[in-house]
Image (cartoon, rainbow over all chains, first blue to last red; front, side):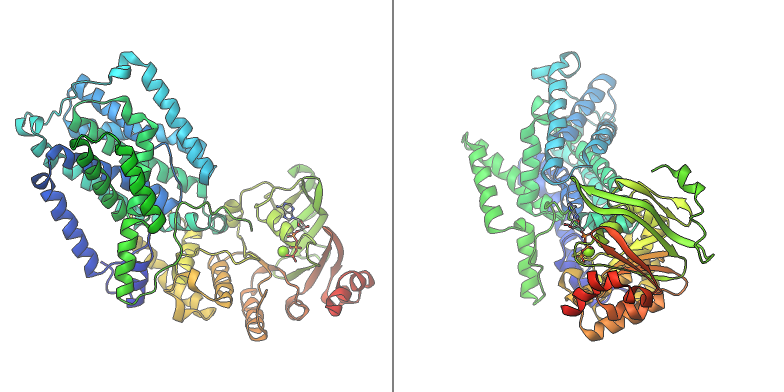
Length: 349
Length: 267
Ligand SMILES: Nc1ncnc2c1ncn2[C@@H]1O[C@H](COP(=O)(O)OP(=O)(O)OP(=O)(O)O)[C@@H](O)[C@H]1O
Ligand SMILES: [Mg+2]
């Protein structure tokens, strides 16, 4: 990428600093491995579960964009995943549009919802931001639950079709649907990467580390936060729409606080501020839940919760952060001692 | 707070007949009933270096916070080159050409000095909201950024995260960051705090250089720094202006000697 101008020190620094650039052959190898895994997944595991992993991975990447890079912990991201799931489902049922169009319209709806919520919540940070976003998500849950004529209330939306230009394999078989949906998932992830490695992404990290100082440099911190909030909601919406299409129905579960909590759990478990961590976290949690469910175990929450507690206590930078730190240490590089991200850094002057 | 009655006053022209770059009228700030800044009138003449001195807790930093929008005044108005900026947000005031440094080092721990300065240059140029562009766009600022980093002696550390820098290096980066905004008016809050003699002299030299063609207001407890740099001194005491004038007039002012300089010389 920028190998001609990057000094070796810059590359090294990037690798040990979550949230910043680091472009080396290892990064490309990682990308290649990731692609191979994504392509091989439905051969290795049950295709609908593969699709669940892909959708949750994109959802977690969306949350990481907000949590890892802007330092904002949303505890109401189910509002965007879920609102898009409903809009996507309704568009597919009522208008019969091809599924990528339905999912993209769902994502647009999620962004439209995120704009007012973002404007009202970015004035807060830390725990207050988490509480305000949770409150809005609960309001949405209430509306969706009450608005039976449109959403089906507790019954949800049944029979969401996966229209795809009459290509029956995609429309009926999860295996082929996975490959038809994967480009959208990857495009979403690429978009998140683009945002992180843009001039905007640089400012975002600055507003996370020290918002007061960013203002002194002329940056309107709230505007940056609203923008990343809306972008994150769009990606969460794309993921939620594809999830709904994959399952063929939409339930209240998608707008519930449990869904908001699960995506936070996945992202933190995987390791924030890296995007990769979110993907790894989704793979681990969705697979674990599937294994437990198929073994007939009904205390899934206890197991995933315990895994979460253990990882957070023992490996503060998450699974991925711990792995990259170990690799960096073996190469003899300096590793930042401090974790980044969720902490509220609105400090005095 | 009303711009109209302020504009009526000829605040633009200083008594000397020179243009006023930064001006405050009747500025006060209450913290839950405690008046930290009390009815302060301040005129900073364009192109001059103006020192703000006073004992700990005198309200110097609070005054800076008022002037740069980090605090909203309880009473009073602030103008920059005649434009009323009272109640504006810090980022808007930065775009009016007023830049500040912070008494407590305030940097972005995960960004390198080079990235800091690029961020400052971009902040003034605009374009930070472009999330769809590559961050290679920031390379356009690289050359200027490297110049500024060299100016403050940080070239060897240009790619080290700021969180890993030593205290003096962080202070130097603060300076580079403020200069990167190419401001018309600079407010420096204790630029030499905690520095050894060598770094103090280096900072004096640097401030002297960047003060050319600019207006500088700085806070410092070190009278050597004040004496070497300041054309004009304002002494603040318990939130009030105690004395104003040239360094020599203020230094010989009996109230100042008893209230402040005396305390300094005893220390
Ligand atoms: N946010 C705040 N809330 C309440 N009181 C404050 C606040 N900020 C400052 N003060 C009080 O206002 C007074 C002036 O503080 P300020 O920091 O402006 O002093 P200073 O002149 O900069 O002192 P120093 O030389 O120690 O930096 C102090 O008594 C301080 O305790
Ligand atoms: Mg102070």
